[in-house]
Image (cartoon, rainbow, N blue to C red; front, side, top):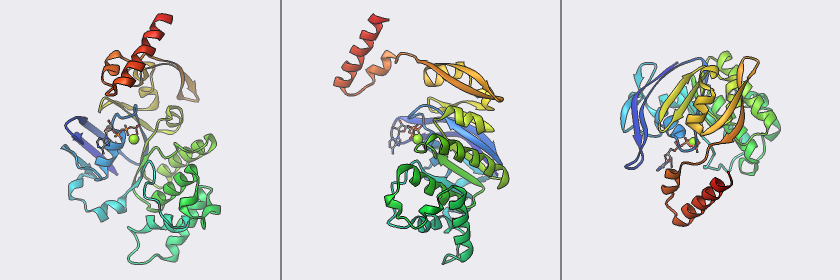
Length: 285
Ligand SMILES: Nc1ncnc2c1ncn2[C@@H]1O[C@H](COP(=O)(O)OP(=O)(O)OP(=O)(O)O)[C@@H](O)[C@H]1O
Ligand SMILES: [Mg+2]
């Protein structure tokens, strides 16, 4: 599976969010997209799966312009696990996950679909939730159910928007490790947005780092996770240590916020408060 993005631009309003994104991703592989809040990571994923239409530029899947791919075709090959399930289903967990089989089932679900659902729940360690109401789960349990729904789709590309953000540390590690394994075993191109640099660096084949609406760096974790890149992109001072061949980030300090950022805060009350705090910090430093 091959995703090619050429000179993609996107804006919701007059402000351009994504500028000239050009990116080539070939699977099977486990890729993480990183970058600060608001940089355009979720927007980029939405341009790939046709939830949004780019203002300019093109996205190709296996050489085919996504504009030409029907929603049904797309659902068969591209799975998407959103950041949060806004659409709360008054359904049991098993029925919620079964909905992921929809692109494959003709008009009714089969026993084989249910087998896939139960196997996936078991793989994620949530079989015990099968009969629970989806709306009555914790945030982390929700996230695992949504992940199961994406996996039962058996896509060749899986797009995940911060799939482990609500999971405890053990489950963050466990799920990310499982995603890496699935990318190999099931030959999937998995593209995951993540704010957890260390876990992503430990398991990703490739990291895409975004900065100011563009791609700032693409490469192996060791190539991309460097003190210089972290300083430019996130505004943090960090040291990198080696963790069995993967870079492990030790955060040292956050650089002071740029005064021009304060000027762009549109609430005068908040801008004044931030400025006063920064001036205070400046004096004591
Ligand atoms: N529906 C929308 N209408 C207008 N602006 C939007 C909309 N959705 C997002 N934006 C803006 O587009 C920019 C990029 O948002 P996006 O959600 O892609 O960021 P992100 O990189 O995923 O951030 P985060 O790490 O916080 O999830 C932000 O400035 C955001 O405010
Ligand atoms: Mg986002």
